[in-house]
Length: 286
Image (cartoon, rainbow, N blue to C red; front, side, top):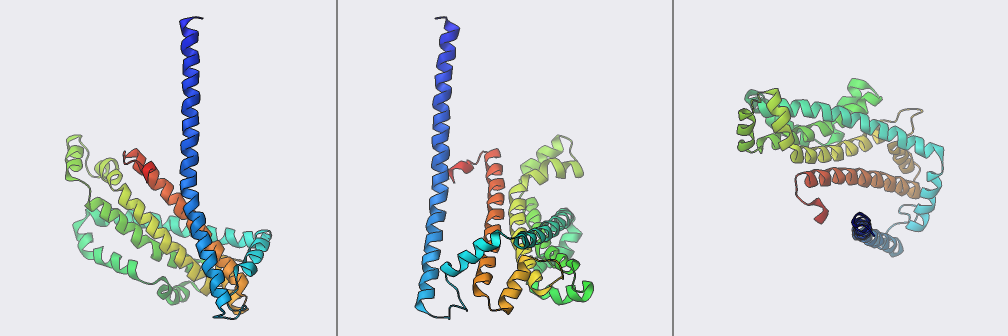
């Protein structure tokens, strides 16, 4: 047997061993992630069923898991339900994208221009603390009962958090990086694009995550308040389930809203972990 053949065989065995270790590590990480979630779901279901058995409310007011989940699974098989999910997600993505663009522009300007910081810094924080439901009377007055009214409130709910996230990230950019950028010849836009924005990414990502949370809450409130004909949505289903005292349907829709929120949060977490790995912060150990 030649030396090259022997080396190739050893390399192949090493590759198999590495692949096995990677599969084992992947299975371990997956199990470490799944079992706490499974335990949490089990605890919530047990508490839920316990409250139902305690009889604090009538079954038609507060349905139990045995009534809610059949309704949920039945809805998952209907086209109307998925149309409602599609309408809600379209509104969410459109509103959040507009809020992200506005928040990025406002945050970039306010963080770098002292006059704008003095004039609008506190106002942005004040807008961030405004309850989204408080904007709807104005939104309906301006845009009537339309999608524009919902989008208006979603943007106002999310943009201040996104802008504040970027402003905070810029404020905490290490001066050493700024000096290094100046040494490399970066000025104004180049300095912001190549140095400041990458350094502020962790805070900006946190602002995006918080902005999504505000956007999602604002959207749900908007869809409950603003009912548009021939456009089914999750908020509309919540509204009519309450009107008809359909506790099982109401809780089934709430579970869907919760699950969508969890999925989006996992996407943000994946982005955060990727950023941590890129910066050498070992996100795999979290």
